[in-house]
Amino acid sequence: MSRLVLAGGTVVSAEGSFRADVAVEDERIAAVGLDLPRDGAEVVDVSGARVMPGFIDGHTHMDMPFGGTVTADDWDTGTAAALAGGTTTLVDFSLQDVDGTLAQAVETWREKAAVARIDYGLHVAITNLTEDVKREIPALPGLGVSTVKIFMAYKGTPLYTADEDLFEALQIAREAGVLVLVHAENGDVIAKLQAQALARGDTAPRFHAATRPEACEAEATNRAIRLAEMADAALLVVHVSCAAALEEVRRAHARGATVFAETCPQYLVFTVEDLARPGFDGAKYVCSPPLRDASNQAALWDGLKMGDLQIFGSDHCSFNLAEQKELGKDDFTLIPNGAPGVEERSAVLWTHGVREGRITENLMVAVLAANQARVHGLAGRKGAIAPGADADLVVWDPELTHTATQANRHGNVDYTPYEGMEFHGGPAAVYVRGTLAYADGEVLSPPGTGRMVARAFERPPAWAVR
Ligand code: URP
Ligand code: ZN
Ligand code: ZN
Image 1 (spheres, protein in one colour):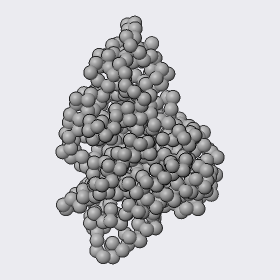
Image 2 (tube, protein in one colour):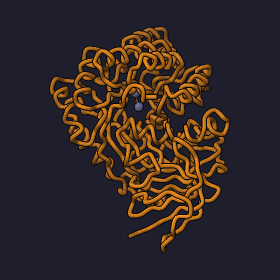
Image 3 (spheres, protein in one colour):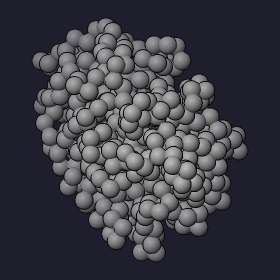
Image 4 (spheres, rainbow, N blue to C red):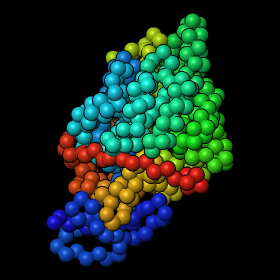
């Protein structure tokens, strides 16, 4: 039996922080308490550090075909970058083939994930909601999949889903115990605005934001929530980018609706001005929903603080500038949407949140781990430092500082949007199921060590959503 004790640190949970040792036995947490017996265990002195549950990122896109290309990070490089940010579990989107089944999507993604360095779960992103696919949704929990994503945006691609289908999917999902994730932007309005912009000759990256206004996201957010309420289904609105959309989530919570919502690091540290960087550099910041003006950032911090935004995911969807983002050199609508962020997610939250007094370290653990586990169906196994849970642990050094640059990133992208940004706090060491997976800037966990974790969604009572 292997035994490890992380001794003398401050354990940070979603509820509070306290001095305690953490004992690990055979991949699981065996005990948490003061002065735990050593009994011949390997003892690691972590005094001065915070000990946090391994972070969960419920929103990544590894090795995913999108926008005429495939994301730059696969499961090897993407999970290396995740580890460098203290993330020990991803939930990634298996993308349904337009002519394929949901089960085939899961199978394809399991094959891609064979090189994962950390544990993972899988959503299915629905690209073609046929009658057969509707009939297949109830089988997903049997495959360990508790979530599907439906897109109200990307009109003109198979991803786009009309209201009647979204509504029916919500009804089916409610019965099946599946949580629907929604990309809430009005696809029809975007398509019209994009066509009008191109007709005017407005082809630069900054028109990506101009053709996806805040109202477009707010309207779709409200519509998705109302559809979910009519279907009596729970809903997760992913990548909330602006105050207007958040306001719709807040109103839903005031009505007692079971609505979860996520925001992402890019919306807290970048703005629409980044899309207007000289030359074609704005393409590095093209993601959807788009970056907004800075006035939205305070609202998003408030949303995290007040519990309207319960989770903080990266939406890591990386494309190289060369040959990938460049597909849209003469037409912003052809720039593949997405940005890397799986590595920076936790440092953004510590640097700009905890360190600047906007949130507590406990809220950080809530939105990176505990709430992620609850929403994404991993509770009990992941997201908490408690006896019986997997020993996924982050030894967080609040004094660590580093400046992000492309060369010191652990992923596979030819740029970082965070270039030159100084971060405070970071993982000194990361354990996945009790094994040291990352230390002092080096990824130690080899490809292929990650395991798929079966997930099950449990709908909480509405009052417990926040
Ligand atoms: O721009 C983004 N967010 N790309 C990834 C796909 C999605 O909509 O999440
Ligand atoms: Zn999306
Ligand atoms: Zn995404």
